[in-house]
Length: 75
Image (cartoon, rainbow, N blue to C red; front, side, top):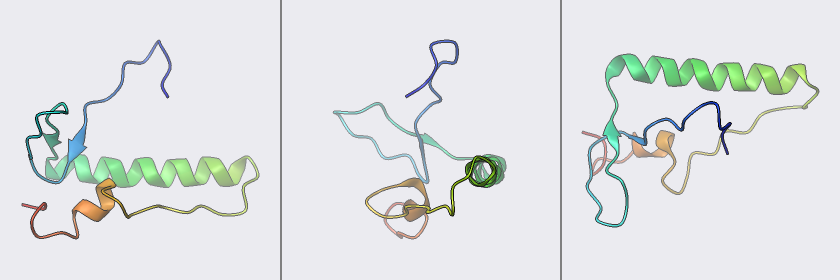
């Protein structure tokens, strides 16, 4: 979900893998990785500030974090 005032960000991946059915992902640059880490940090802090007891980061099933753990994806 995203605001109509803010366009969706490009699809990011640990490497560029083409798939006919989907928009090709954009390979991450090293400087973008630190920004994603900061985005996770900010999201966790925001959740705690509004009253959540904790934060779970899902890293299975093809999510971005999991991609960096796979030799055939992470180039």
